[in-house]
Length: 46
Image (cartoon, rainbow, N blue to C red; front, side, top):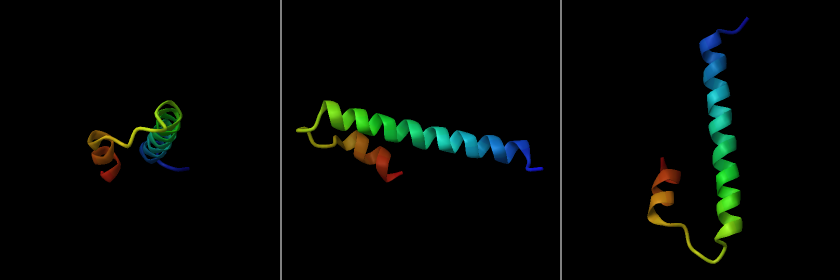
């Protein structure tokens, strides 16, 4: 069996990626004509 810590870490990472992609899709749908602000750019660079 896999370690619970590694399983929870993978689950958290998957949830973060899913939430980020969901927010990006919502943001692109709400503001299609506005460019990405420096704050979002700095977050994506991490």
